[in-house]
Image (cartoon, rainbow, N blue to C red):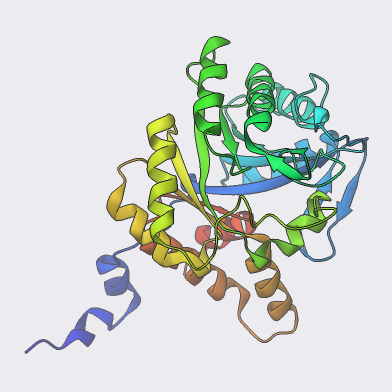
Length: 322
């Protein structure tokens, strides 16, 4: 007969036998970058998160590094859009300028760039519209151009989030043809059509003009389909795969962890962040404890890497004695 409470008696023992640990190097903070200078726009639905012009973004990255952060995921919020999303691959595009500046000022900072068209198209969808629908195959060459343009300015990892079939293969081929063989791909392999993305769409100005994204993002009722998506992306050349969202999909994270041997990321998305922030502001919950518990749950489910808008706060709390 075991008296299990012996191993819970005080904090030193609890730390000694703790099974799951958050690792600061495996936390990634998302950043939104916009046009202009001296701009830091608050995002109403995501308290504490901002759209930064490049000059202000550098200050935000510096602050994040001082907290212990070593990697960021970058999204562009352009002023101009068109039906081809051409701003996404422009040499002078907002992400391209931001990445170049970050690498100049913080050369060791790990830069991951989101590869998608939704913020750059005037219709708000993640691909090219043809005959009233998103055309998978017409979108692929553009995604490849976006990835190459990001690699050319110093991105370390490109992360396609569009959910077009075969985009990992197409991006890998285009990177390799342009001598970017060492640029890794973190695929949003398992991205569900989720209501948890609402605040992000405000942040990135990427709400679809009409319809929704259910024809290319995954049905949230499906689990086995996640294995198909992830296995295919690995076969096409993905170095890492991602599950998005995270907290409502811990079972999917655990399922993929059992099946795959590549690094597994989970994206704790804007809706998850907003719910915690608002509840904390109303003093209904202890924000620090809720965030650390939630991130630990994602790690316990099997994620190696966690992308979270809480990352900078979590790093600060992890540095505190708990």
